[in-house]
Amino acid sequence: MALLGSGVVALGHVLIDCVGRVSGEVLNILDHLSSPAHVDAALMEKITEALDANAQEPPLSRRAGGGAAVTAKACSSQGLPAVLLGCVGRDAGARFLLKELDLPGVELRFFESDKPTGRFCCFDTPKGRKIVASPQAARDIRRYSIPEDCLKQGWVLHIDGLLIDEPEWLRGIAERAKAAGMAVSMDVSTSFNAAKSMAELLAFARQYCDLVFANEEEWERLIHGVELEHSAARSCVWVIKKAERGASALKNGEWTHKVAVEKLRISDDIGAGDAFAAGFLATWLAGEAIAFCLARGNESAALLLSQRRLKEMEAL
Image 1 (cartoon, rainbow, N blue to C red):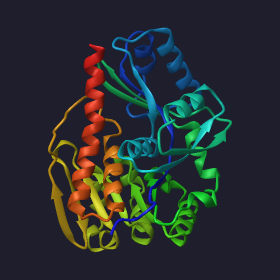
Image 2 (image 1 turned 90 degrees about the vertical axis):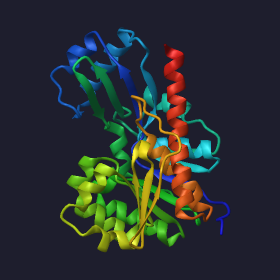
Image 3 (image 1 turned 180 degrees about the vertical axis):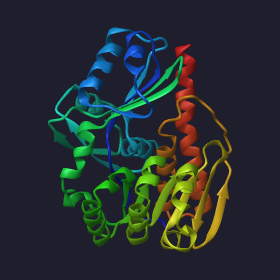
Image 4 (image 1 turned 135 degrees about the vertical axis):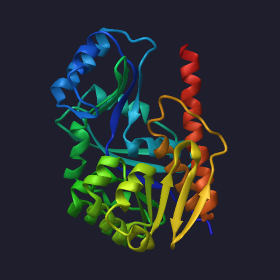
């Protein structure tokens, strides 16, 4: 049975994504950094200034990023209402995000921080790909209580798994959401997070989650050292994203698989998994079977990648 008046409340890091091939002074700055690298605000500002001073060819893609933001954007394309909860700075970066995320059906509920708006960079260089992140204000979401009017009966609270590093704060939000009649879903977010916070993620999933999204690497890291199929996986649906090969879901000990109809491979696939989650959630909220949810998730991810590929072709 379809749930009327439903939507998604996406909670997590909200960032500016900067993606593309770089040259010039930026390469000199990146040369000594490992990948992925977390850098302070001063170094990220230096990178940003170098990017602005030296035009890159083809132009870099700058857009709203972070799992919660990409999910909310994809919800808009699905016609599914969304509330985006995040934290930004009092700066030009915040104004950029407000403009980028001014989308039909998306309500922005941004808290403010004295720190700069967070950034995530994925650069192609002659020596390979470099990932550089500076979350800054995005991390300060953990300082705030979620407003009561954001806890909506029949909606899904979709959580960025990186927030598990403040488990007591996150548990409090999940308990309030459950009490308000919401479902809870979580995206594991990164393989590093899966390895570092395995116990916390599994405990949270077991206690609060109706759905958990993970890619194959994250799933493999989580099942090491624990019989997941006989513990946390029994209490919720685990959705495993497999990129161009489609996706699978584990529910009540049984697997459902759905291959991707359109197999797209492009260099900039950042956020495709979050777009998948939006498509899956839209169908799940409508009361459809897991197989249909997986298919809709695959379609939503393919839509994002198709739009990116079109932009790449237009830039040539």
